[in-house]
Each structure stands twice: as C-alpha cells, then as structure tokens.
Length: 273
Image (cartoon, rainbow, N blue to C red; front, side, top):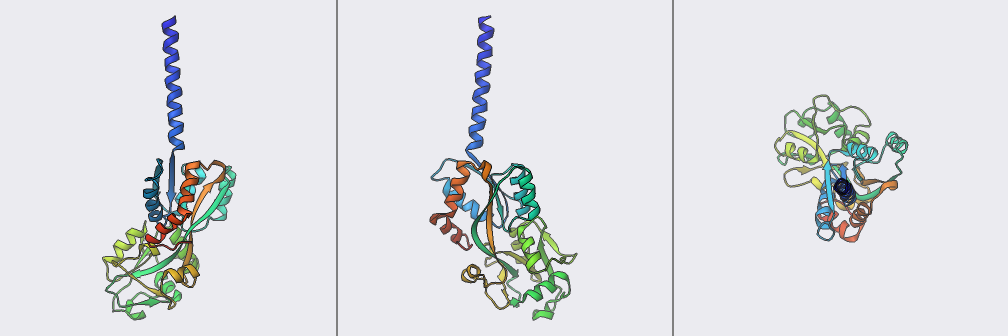
C-alpha cells in the first residue's frame, strides 16, 4: 500500500513538474508571425536582443494577413504587418476577446523595381497602374527598349500587395498573367534575373541586384519616405493582444522602439521613427 501511494505521488509530482516546465517554456518564448517586409527588422533585432536576454524568439514571415490571423487565433504573440488592420479583422479580434494594440515600428516605402539593364529610370503612379492592369504592355511605350513587360506582383495575403492595390491599382485587379510571388526576396530574385521584369518591394529590400525607380519624379530616399513625399510611403506595424501580452513580448517590442532598436531599423535599410 505504501509502495502504491509512493508511486502515485511520484507520478503526480512528475506531471506537475512537466506542466510547470511547459508553462514556463511558453512564457519564455515569443512567437512572431506576419509580414515579410517587417521580417528583416524583426530578425535583426532578435539576434541582438538574444545576446542580452535569454528568451526564445520564433519568427515566421508568411504575409501580413496571416500574421494578423495568427494573433486572432492565439498562435502568435506579435503580428508583423506592413498595412493597418482591416475593420473586419478588428471585429474578428474583438469577438475572440482580443484587445488589439497597434504599434508603429518603422516607416517604409513600396518601391517599383526593374532589372539594372533596363534604361527606364522612373514612372508615374498612372503608368504603374496601366502596366499592372495590362493597358501598357511593352517597355517602348514608356521609354524603354522594345520588349513585352513581365509583371511581377505579390500574393493577396501580403500587406505590401494590399497597399499597392489601394495606392497604385485604386482597388482594380492586376493583369491575369502577372507572376505572383510570396515574398519581397522572391521578387528581388525574379526581377534581377529578367531584364524585362518589373516588380515592387519594401525599401529595405532595394539592393544593387535591382534598380529602384522614381515615382512621380520623386526618388525613394529615407528623407522622402519619412516625410511622406514619396507617393508610396507607408508605416510598418506590430500588433499585440493587450489582454495577453507577456513580459517578454513587451520587452522585445520596447527594444525595437528604443534608440538601439531603431538604429538596427536604419542599418537594415528601413526608415526609423
């Protein structure tokens, strides 16, 4: 009888220890999902943050819409987004008992990009609209070499796509033969390999592999992005549930908003607050 009671006690203690360990592990872990545009900022900050704080930070770049869904269903502590939350998303969050807090993390621009071999240096918003809806289909129509324009766009779960859809397309559809890419990095890779391609990326993804275009005669510079002079300027966000915001998640966000964190934002090619 004593032996049986002892074994039960050991099993109960082991189970309690396991539960405590799991609970502690969950508390010590920060899960971040969402925008591929905000991804480099978060990754860079996490690398530096982990040097001074022992916390596990898991980051997934699957698009702004997916990040917000993850926040709503409770599978993420922080949702990265390159667009503001939609009314229907806020409603869904509220119905799930989530008190959403919007945190501005940086400024950004959506920059049209072409292959470095392309002689076109700039386009207007109207020309971009015409290219993406198919009204303009040859580079010679806008000062380039004779050749069909290959249109590269983002998929619909992307916050970058959402902003482009509103500011450039005026909520009309992109041409049906556009090649859809799941990330900024994929667009950079595709455009860099195709002299006839055009795409758009967050400012932090502009590199010598691609050529950034002026829009309405305005260069995509940090100054023009921060002032809003560049026509496709925007803000980058992190969304959290205030009702269930862990200390570790709050401290990580505070780090990104700190002087050191904003320095990393600039180093990554984005625009600090």
